[in-house]
Length: 114
Ligand code: AMP
Image (cartoon, rainbow, N blue to C red; front, side, top):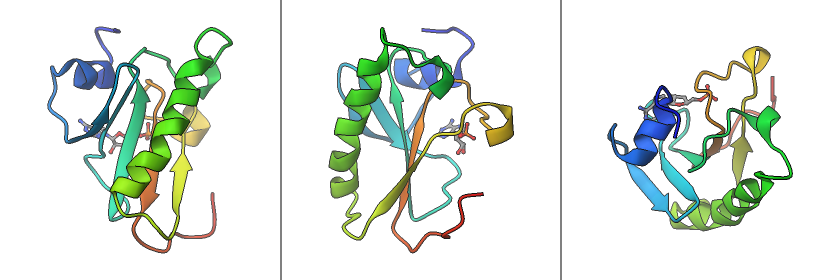
C-alpha cells in the first residue's frame, strides 16, 4: 500500500467507497463522478501507478482484472456493450496515480475516443 494513494486508501477501507466487487487481487467501486449510467472503477489491490508500470512481475493483476470485468458488466446489466478505458499519464489526464480501468455503459457512448 502507498500511504499517499487515494485508491490504496479506498482498498484499505480508510476512505469509503461504493464497492461492487472484491476478491484477493481486485477491487471495484462506483466512480464518484459518473460519466455514464454505469461507471465502475476496477483496480488491482497491489499499487501499480499506471499502465506504464505494468511488468512481467505484476501483469497477472491485469489478467485478473480483465477476468473480472465481464462479471461486473453482467451484474450491472450491460448486455448491449460497454467501454473499458485506462488513462495513463499527463496527456491522458490520469488524475489518480493507481492503475484503474473505467467500465462505462448503460447508454450509447460517443464514438470518438479523443
Ligand atoms: P482518471 O482521471 O482516469 O485518473 O480517473 C480517476 C477517477 O477517479 C475519476 O473518474 C474520478 O471521478 C474518480 N474518483 C476520484 N475520487 C474518487 C473517490 N473517492 N471515489 C470514487 N471515485 C473517485
